[in-house]
Picture 1 (cartoon, helix red, strand yellow):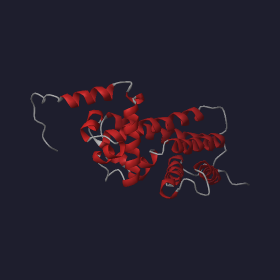
Picture 2 (cartoon, rainbow, N blue to C red; picture 1 turned 60 degrees about the vertical axis):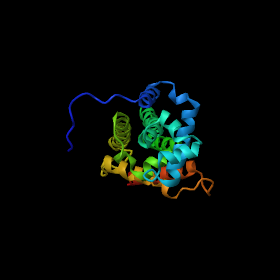
Picture 3 (cartoon, rainbow, N blue to C red; picture 1 turned 30 degrees about the vertical axis):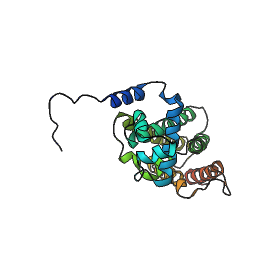
Picture 4 (tube, rainbow, N blue to C red; picture 1 turned 135 degrees about the vertical axis):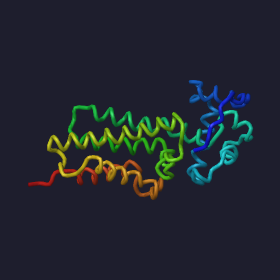
Length: 222
């Protein structure tokens, strides 16, 4: 552990101050230039991989000078967090909405997995999160929020499976947490081989995977 020097903090540069103000501004999400930067970052991260990507790559992609890009963002990690925060929260919120419905556990699980794939389709930047294990390199309160969303999602999905086991709709001999890991592992691997415009759409792939997940949990016939 490195020692931290005590004393007065170095004065914040004008660029850093403006960048911090933009980051905290509630209207940044609707700023057209900021949205263009996020789109460029998503394209670069998916094309060359997050570890290899640089802010220079993003600036070139969006057609900005590096100095102009620094007015909006200071690190590529900040871009990554901004890209992932909304879709990962959306995944979790949709699951909790489905789980609160008065329907059977199999129906809830199927609906939840359809929503998961739907969010993947709406936000392809999620493939960056799934392919690079980037949650291991992110830091700060925003990154903690992303990890908390992922944990809450896993717990809520395990709750759906556990309630199905208690109701006799699912097998009781499979640990719900292990079942979640297996199911999400299957879905999260889609990014390795899925090709848009192929024989099956992402939604159709998700439906087939949901059938497999339900079949593995369904109680065997007597």
